[in-house]
Image (cartoon, rainbow, N blue to C red):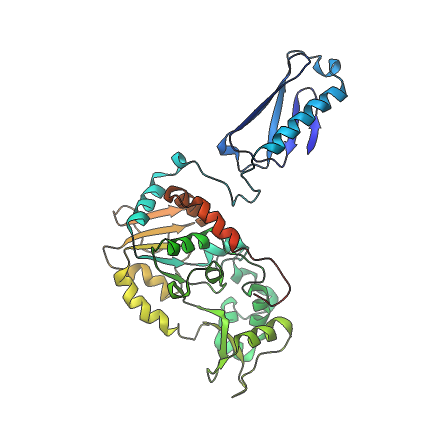
Length: 378
């Protein structure tokens, strides 16, 4: 799309090209049109083509028709170039020699590890469009005013649900997995660890179900705070059909009710006042002994007992924190810990590049994209 042109510059938008150079020698006054983009500029959504003229009278001596002809030739050449980027940046390839040393060191640890333990928090889902819980101003707890809660955490309090279930049911309509939100590149990276026989277990603190949708194998995934796929009565604990619970919440304004005792039913999300799944305690005791590498991603490490996992692993287990800010007892002055501050997706891309998994990462992520829909079908 030509935005504008004159005797000095032409701007063509919506182009992302890697390492491409094109020159057009005009028939008039040897005007040179040079199109050159380095790999570092792949993430941009527009390219600038400068016209260097040997004469200030270039525009007056060259007719509009002739200039348009040259521009058409340029456009045709650009269309033939292989496009490697997307506006979102999800598909941008990284030069191997620009990967930081700390990332390479973590990559080397991954190469030699066979039993990698992962701890993921809400931060790994932020790029999917799901807010984390505690970030001031944008976190979920700071944006629940519309539910008129006595305090933010009440929306996940079992006693509050027993008295006032509607706020959680309304939030469930927004968060229900498989309807709108897709796994991020970080989720896909964890799935690749499983595919390459390196994943021991992914302990997720999230209830968004994106690890499951990312195709991390069920036996290697532990959703510590539960999920939406099954349901039970909050009083007698009798299991309730998960699909029926889903249909009731998403398609009606009714409250799912237990046919046995008449108590309210909710998805098997762990609320404050409820115990974590038995599977968590059973597997954790074994995994903290087996793990040879722990990756902690996108978490504030605020909610026990999951937040204590980094302290539970044995002394010889290497530990990596991939987070926007330092948390926990990680100490990068020791040989055991590495702290990688920044965006989890960017770190996942760099690690994938170093490990030779870059194409797999994007393919895995592409294959698990969710198409937004109104239906209740997952």
